[in-house]
Amino acid sequence: MNRRTFLKTASLATAAASLPNILRSQAPGAQAPVNKINVACCGVGGRGYDAVQGMKGENLVAFCDVDDERAAKTYLEFPGVPHFRDFRVMLDKLGKQIDAVTVSTPDHMHFPIAMAALSLGKHVFVEKPMTHTVAEARKLAEVAREKKVATQMGNQGHAREGARLLKEWVEAGVLGEVKEVHSWTDRPIWPQGVKPFDHTKMMPVVPSTLDWDLWLGVAQPREFDPGYLPFVWRGFWDFGCGSLGDMGCHIMDGAYWALGLTAPTSVEPVSANQTEISAPTASVTRLHFPARGSMPAVKWTWYDGGMTPPVPADLEENRKLQDNGTLLIGSKATVMCDTYYDSVRIIPEAKMKEMAPSLPPKTIPRVAGGHFAEWLRACKGGVSAGSNFEYASRLTESVLIGNVALRARRRIEWDSASMKVTNLPSANEFVATHYRAGFGV
Image 1 (cartoon, rainbow, N blue to C red):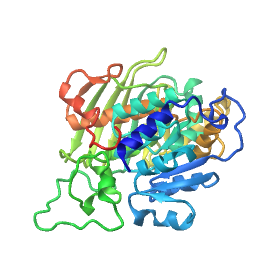
Image 2: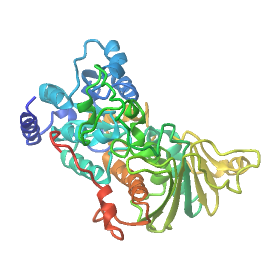
Image 3: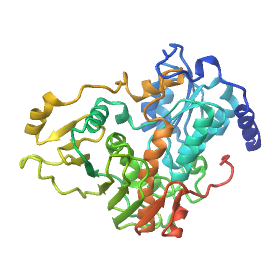
Image 4: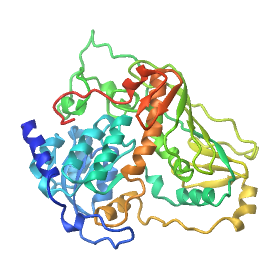
């Protein structure tokens, strides 16, 4: 495909007067139409298979994946759906038939694919983290706002019961003042802190089922190595966002939303075995969030690679911290949450039972069917999805600014309004990225 043709096609679509009636945004609370929409899925192996399953009640009109082996299960299950290796070709050939696009690729390709779809006026779902860099998150939110399309980031816990309970408790003052939060994960479960691959003795052969050039996408060219695939790309700065980027948008989400946080003003990192190309084997990252109205400033500490917070005094002696979770330390009560906020409990359990009768009523609307169903209803004119790009970009920025500090290996001061590190100018090179030409970004 001629790339100039693709960009021209995108520009013409952007200038279109309006979307079809079924896809126009309606006022909050409006009844969503029941019509099916035409969905294209980018990245359909691995995690992408889940997106395909979430979309199978709609009209699946196209699949795109650079790895035929990883995508084979999906292709066999849906033999009538055309599939492509290059998302640009897919959008060029079938753009007029597509209403919505899901993106479940490695992190570095979230932005170019989502941006191409948004430029054509398509609704977009993107797996977490929303983008690879802070600047990309800002841009996607801006364009989604302009296009008035339905968006969602794939942090599924945001659509679940526990996140709503926690927000209701915080807003009702059940926890008192929350000035301290701790989150932790057992990631990485893949190699990190690695050095460049040595190809002087043997040059790996690219599998015939993989288009390595398209897998690299906007990343700078390099020789293929099986050490990047299929999952371990997460540990490389050029492709993934490490443990914090992998799990932060899940584990931090419920507490971030409940506390009404925006961007941190400073970040202090400590890491182990970090290299220039790869995220650390373990880290402790402290983010400082400013006061909001009557709510105090928050010190939020992130732990990964086997590091965990001090066991709170409120936790029963025979009870352990789970492998992934969040603690909100309030002046009146401490709450412990699991990864996706399925479990949100005041500790100790005796205090949970004691306080249960006085907990506030449910006031936040619940989500039926999960985050895919929530997004699809939004695509059909229903209310915006909870983790739409307006919200998701702020959460993603807070997570990824932690990575900026880790890569700078210094305490940084963050001016979110200007999107700059103010005390260490060299750290700003990690706020955005340099793209390889040919992908419209």
